[in-house]
Figure 1 (cartoon, rainbow, N blue to C red):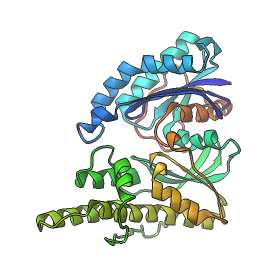
Figure 2 (cartoon, rainbow, N blue to C red):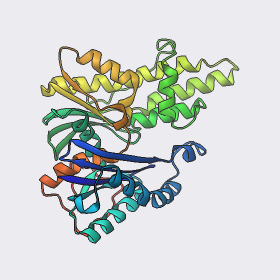
Figure 3 (tube, helix red, strand yellow):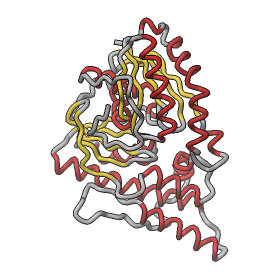
Figure 4 (cartoon, rainbow, N blue to C red):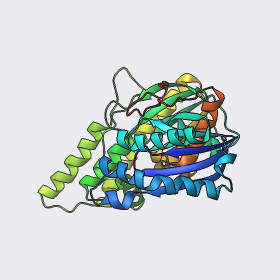
Length: 337
């Protein structure tokens, strides 16, 4: 089964053709990073306009690169939640029009479920059940994946997401957007023991995260140094901060795995490309857990992951009608179509 998948939840206009949820025939991404870098972050109105400009060309290229035509496509999958509402609407409305024009089924797909599904592409042998750490710019969840479309959140951030915490700290240090990616590169050259950082915990919720206090601690460190006229060793600050964020993520994730008796662990989302997070999970899981991580090119937003999850949504009978709407906020275990 060939699925044409469309993703436009933030600042990447993406489309892909995926066969049977596991084989990528094409994966086209039009990035807006250079434009948003001028403003230090994603500007929702600009993102929406750029999606509208790019989506026709991106979808056309995805179909052509896959070596097929729209007649060869069996269904159209699209990210309908969660995300920037204006950006989502561009993809949803385009997909609805395409579905109506071709008579192909329309598959509504949840953005976070799609991130998890990126692992089905990188690891064709992977099947639920497993425990997944979903970490991105807007989300930090520990998800119990019972089946391809049956998921339960057992841990989540109470404030900032891990990616957001990286980006805000990077911005305070004058590191250009996308801050989290650049911070990770700089941290590779720093001393991660130079600046002790707090490791926040949420009382009564051992799997939940809280990054706002950690973010405040590093911003205070930066401001205090500058106010005193002292040199700020950027690489050391990045390394120390990254170590603390990654420590919070791995500690809660492995505690949840131990308590739930899960032996198969998975990561997903943009932050799963973080160098230290990948190394630490490999080290901590070695000999104790089976660890799966998506290839780095699949960690960020892309159409292939939507096509992978769309296949399993289709098998579950999740087909949308022409009144499908975009939703800015939607839990991973809910369907609303």
